[in-house]
Length: 149
Image (tube, rainbow, N blue to C red):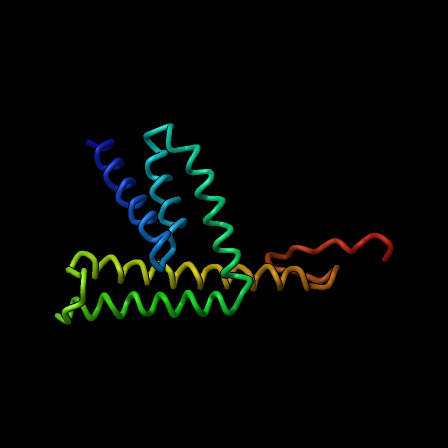
């Protein structure tokens, strides 16, 4: 029973991620999540999981480094959420039903979370990189001063 649940959940996440590769949304992130679920029970999922994780990380890093890409991703996420809400409110949209509306809303929220996380991580890394040597960092750690000082 547990294997069947993992297969269905991992398969749905992976398929949703594949769909989001061509639609606005965090495609490789969901593909990686689906394959990670599948890899807990199926050894064949481990190899494509490594590839999907690398692609997802590259995408997150690209969004993190570019405020324009982050803004575009947030805008796309808001459009997804708005379309989903409109469909749930009864507005007749083509190719929409309650299921696709919920998937759009969840995808939009997931995309916002991914962008916020990526931007926050980038800012933390920039702060660490610009901290002067020998100054106290977070958690009481000191950065080593470069040789020659």
